[in-house]
Image (tube, rainbow, N blue to C red; front, side, top):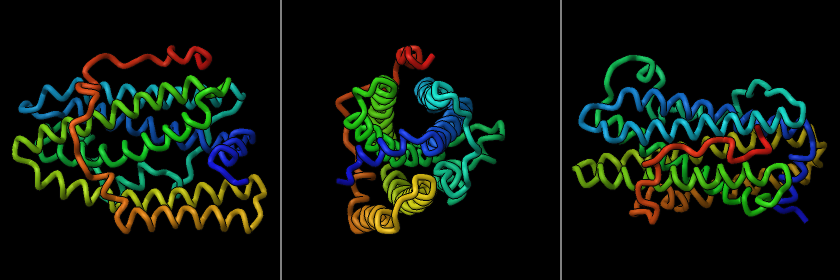
Length: 265
């Protein structure tokens, strides 16, 4: 029977597909770490209280990238260059979601509207990341090699999502409500398309390596298209709603070090 766990187990058991999976994940996390680091450095004076939280977010993303690379080293594998069609973070940036890298490379303070765009983009992408890690934790939380890494990253992603909700609600209370809702909707609609396209590209590459039958590949592609259809018809609303989280000030302290996953270091 085809299930999420059996599918991921097949991917994890093969060196080449595991290498692609970890390389894509590590690249995306490293990119997120750089973006958050630059944003933390450029936060406007009116919102300097956000800088430590944004820096913590970036530190977490960097840590996740190191964890995925450590998983590769543990298998004696080297990261591969991420194919463009599977590069989720760069495709989002190319489609104008989040803050442009050209802006982040300049040493000019950001505006409060820039922070709205950043947090709206983060709220949408962290929803996706939290859902993916919840699934992986459910399937592999007790795995002897992956378990601690999966649990640690899943916990961080839940913190990131809580932080985005809380800070966006603070900005909404300060008069940015309409801009936030517009940015959330635009981000969600683009993210859904990018996620669909990246998922199809990744699965096509996995299928070629693993020798999947045409029927199996078609079934998985149909599932990806079905998820996109559901999200396009209304499922996207879960990515744009805001509520005060139970985890308040989720990024208010120091980042948990990667050494909490001791088998990786």
